[in-house]
Length: 149
Image (cartoon, rainbow, N blue to C red; front, side, top):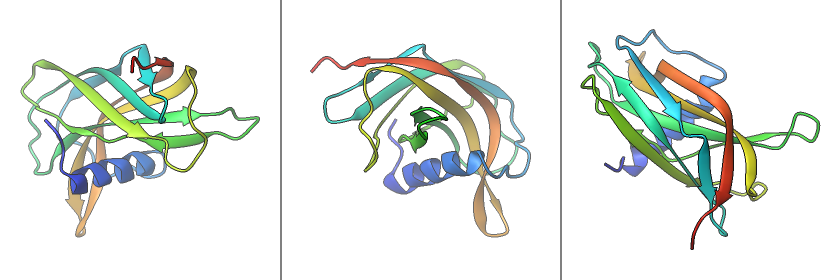
């Protein structure tokens, strides 16, 4: 299931905000995991995948699987890129997710290890603004491999 462009933008914004702000507590439970490998194509498109599980939230607002990639090191300066997200189906069953995105105007990612964060997040209206409410998160090193083209 593809997320409309507006929701995908909200996922990217939510991913960026997750490191800074946490919204109201999520009224759902769940888990999310990123696979140990991903791919990067010649044009810089990164593809990540994994699994998630969640129960139906009691509050209104979409539940999304967001992901981001950190490129670089603390010594040389790292950059984090949010990838497009997908809508989650919160029915208690385990589901797979796949997110794709380009690194934007920054350095093109190369094959090799990168820092990946996958987040299961609900966008909850708070004071007229959609704030991310984290349900579950997973952050670890993922090996990017060249995509078969």
